[in-house]
Image (tube, rainbow, N blue to C red; front, top):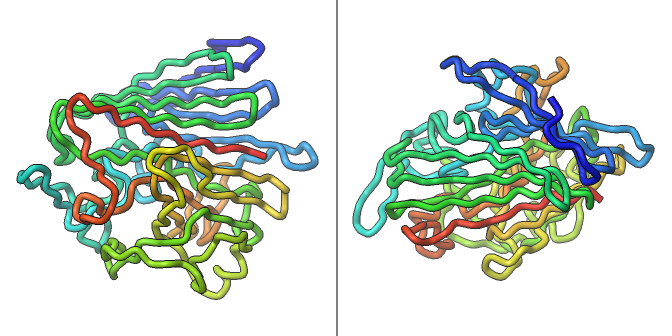
Length: 352
């Protein structure tokens, strides 16, 4: 069903399936005037497809995912393909934090590690959002809304969340995050797509640059130690572009937070990823202070879209975020949201 069709782009809606609780899930297609096309579910805010042309005009789907809602429900709590992550992206040590002297306990859902990961067992990646398609002067948009109730997954406060996806005619995917609360709580929302700008195979022939001089080192449970460490002279130094295969084939792997070179809340260049196979290049800008680099280390022969097999290093995540375990680290940026405050952040993926 075509919902909007004008000079700035097209929005289509189709039934994608039903959850195990018999809730209908819809897939929205956003198409800009240049032919870029993105498909988004109101289940988990998941980007299922993102079709982009290469230097020869051939289109490639540059994100990993599954073919069916059943697979997303069954497997995506292990992988988080394409999903909106909340209430808190990344890890919180022991699933515990304190606000104004009150302690809160979250579910521990990080495998063998004693952490809360990506919002918990039923984080935002599992929720069905209210969806509002829009035609805007810059391109087609989709607003997703969800009310996370007080105590959901252990988090305090009723958190009213809105996510706005816009595919503009400058070939940018803009993701805007808004949230308000009626009780002090913690918030760290992000988008968790796995990118492969070659459209298939491993990411070894990708070139990566990250606008950062520092990382937050982690312990054996992948939780930050509280240090902020320079990357210069280490395998974590991506200030100048590096080809990933030159590192990943030497058994180096990445699942680490970078401290971005930026002023607080300014929209700043964070990273650039380029496929040397297709020539497709993507720049990322964000208001967030950090960026998680994850190189698909735990992909292990999973069957994904179109019957493709996803092996280790077949996708890369570049997740703008607040730092992992920030509620328990005094030196890290504040992640507490109070009533009457507005959580407002942005990510831009620019295809160049």
